[in-house]
Length: 318
Ligand SMILES: Cc1cc2nc3c(=O)[nH]c(=O)nc-3n(C[C@H](O)[C@H](O)[C@H](O)COP(=O)(O)OP(=O)(O)OC[C@H]3O[C@@H](n4cnc5c(N)ncnc54)[C@H](O)[C@@H]3O)c2cc1C
Image (tube, rainbow, N blue to C red; front, side, top):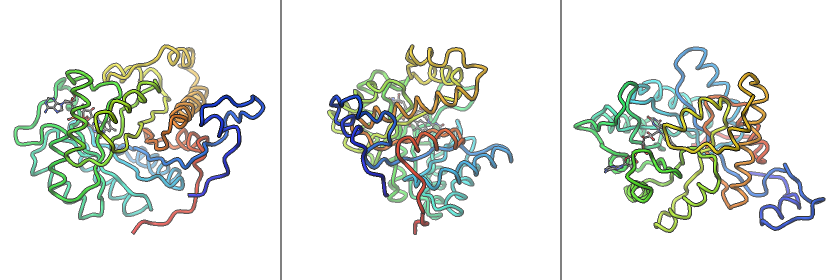
């Protein structure tokens, strides 16, 4: 991947030294190779499908390491996830990763889906326990199913030698007994064969960095890639954050205050906030980012551009 030369001011920034103010290139692209991946969800309607495909096409030239497609809560999008993943595999040069959950299916059913993916050339699975279906407020393992993500990872590894990503939680998962138990769970998932983790979204950089430190101290050595959520709808994100335990810092509420009826301004703020977040992470040695695109390309394209990730010619993987 070719990247432009490092601007002098940025070298100073990334080494965390104080640069003379005349040298500070505040918004220059980042110095090192940044690798990105994008998450999409399977569309429900023709219109949503058109939006998704134009977003995939817009982001593809940024040469993401992979693009992942979610699995609806309760396994409700099984067919649509499969169709979207297959279409990405067959019609684009991108490497797809299929999300797969434990919810509402027997082990045999999950294994059969995994076998289908492997046969179709989809070799990367994002393995999750999954959220309960709408209306159910508690997760209940299926009697004949994989109970937790660690069990699913072990099962998938028996099906084929998948590359497997799992979820990680800088702010502990709401059902975890405590942060330590949650970290033990992440370790179990890695020990079962997962090759990397993608985090739940977060807004406090220190929260992620402290989590990373604790994970490394616990012997977790695989990449733990920050999940970046560009916030287009602050109210909805605040609501969702309550449920998944992600803290919304006061400064962030203030940043979006008064923008409820200002969608264009909100987008600009969202792009700049996410780019700042990535730049701060990069200054701390992080160079992989996973974007929750919400099937929209414009913000992620702009954020990647600000990070120095530019379109380049792509060739279809074998
Ligand atoms: C990157 C990412 C992608 C996601 N994609 C999807 C998706 O496509 N579809 C979807 O439905 N959801 C998705 N989710 C949400 C995810 O399914 C939920 O957060 C879910 O509640 C937990 O899934 P998990 O894989 O982290 O579960 P697990 O790792 O199994 O952990 C779930 C909880 O159970 C606890 N636990 C684990 N093992 C045990 C045990 N043996 N006994 C007792 N407690 C245990 C853990 O500490 C944790 O609190 C995603 C989340 C992330 C971060």
